Image (cartoon, rainbow, N blue to C red; front, side, top):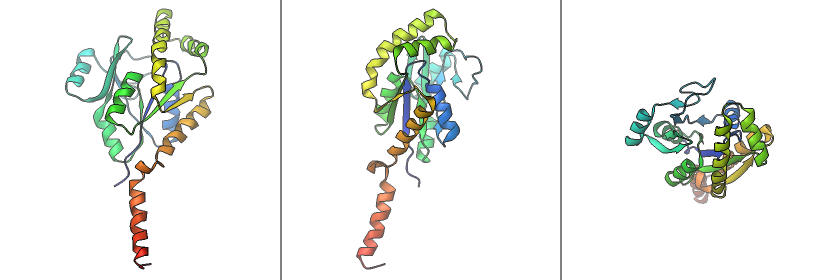
Length: 210
């Protein structure tokens, strides 16, 4: 049986570039990207089942009642959540799973999966964050102000994450995240099968059975 995969939570301010980093990681490396469920309306070009599972509020609340979500939260008037079944299946098959979720959800995931790796993505400064939000052209000025105000609250979660990744240069940020995840595989607690195999082999040697 393969060692269990690494569950990585990737959070950060809206406009920090989380989605772009995730797409690059999945395109280059064999990660499983968990698709979140949400009640917000699709943005231009987004595909149901690929970018998000788009739900009505009623269907999302039914998922909550059936405990089909690892975590869920309401953010800027919309529900977001992580479907449980696909994540647990991929982890048990030894695949590394990426979750792009907000901070409250990240804390809930950590409670259920204490070995999860938590990464926080941020631009180099607040001015750059504002520039990116304006530049993507998907929200009204009022919505942008709401997101910037919410970012002030989100900043308090940064100290609860394992690593901070500054997304100033995309290529470096992508490789930094990849290396952080791969380093988790080298932790002793994640190498149980390798340790056991070596111990068993050495025990045979100690008995003179070369």
